Length: 456
Image 1 (cartoon, rainbow, N blue to C red):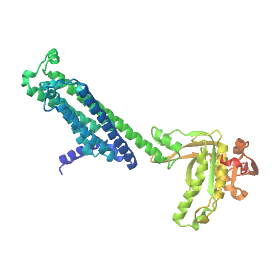
Image 2 (tube, rainbow, N blue to C red; image 1 turned 45 degrees about the horizontal axis):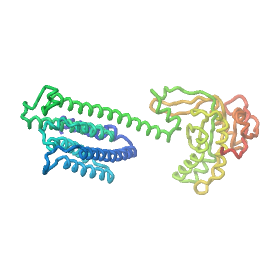
Image 3 (tube, rainbow, N blue to C red; image 1 turned 90 degrees about the horizontal axis):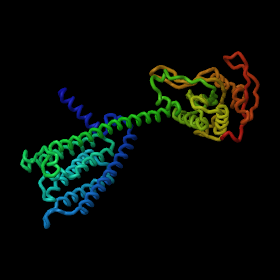
Image 4 (cartoon, rainbow, N blue to C red; image 1 turned 45 degrees about the vertical axis):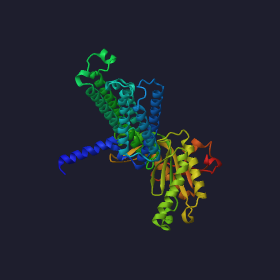
């Protein structure tokens, strides 16, 4: 294939893609294209019902209008065109309910709709025994604009453009027929009053009608194309945010979707937050008894069980590392009672683990450390690969408290600041003081006692 032919084929492909909904439409996920197609099918049914209503109004006006055709005429064209239009509209409506209308049928539908409408207008001069120029003054011309606007219900600019082009070309053909049938130049006038009071044709007036049809078509097509582009863009961004929520917390996914500029330059946040660090007990011995597939399924089931109490109380899991979880409360999502939320989540996690039995009858336990203090949160990494996390000495303390459970024989340990923030809500047992690894001073540690309101 030559370069010119390939270029023409590419242009035709892009034109067809735009005609049917936009070049980016094919890049949408299949589920979204199916949802849009379902909406388009509904639009076609709506178009059918509106056309049926238009037909009904045509018929009512025709029946109510006084008849000026010669008495005893063997053939009246208006009822014939209305009947043909009724048959086609009913067929089209029936097909719209039976199946998705294919591209070729939609194109033919537009051609037939306009042909029947223009044929109806053309027949007026026969119906009323007038020269052909008589139909050029029929107000039924306005229905061409309605037929063009109807195609906008599909939210696809190509069909609007096709309807407008066919309507303009059809009206131009009617003008040509009228002028030719009445002697060409002799049927044309440049006098506006004569045009209104006789069967003469004012070419300027007819050109104005064609220009109006094309301008309305262009404006509608452009508006729909722009609106559809924004619709697809918003769908893609919404889908991206939804997919991101499976990898990062919802609040962070929303922040990514709304961010302006590189995320690595996004402003960090520093405020008091409560950090919960949870680690599975005896993970190595558990993994040795399972196949890789069973191990992954068990770990995922464990994470799901642990995540539910945290998420329900507004906590955000910043990362999973092996069998460990780091969650923060009050960062990035705000929570005035962040310490109480973290302790309640920890107590519920322990309750759920006690009752739950994993695959092959395995029972799992977790150690949890909780600390409250000043924490900074933000995106870290390289411009090409980022993750959201929290940093600070108080984050390290939570991790050390989780490890301290081993020597203290406890399941949950919290620092003094956390205890003081929620001591009115929970009972705590003092576990003395401890100099944590990497620190010079001792801190007081406490263990919350199981409470009936841990699920609250």
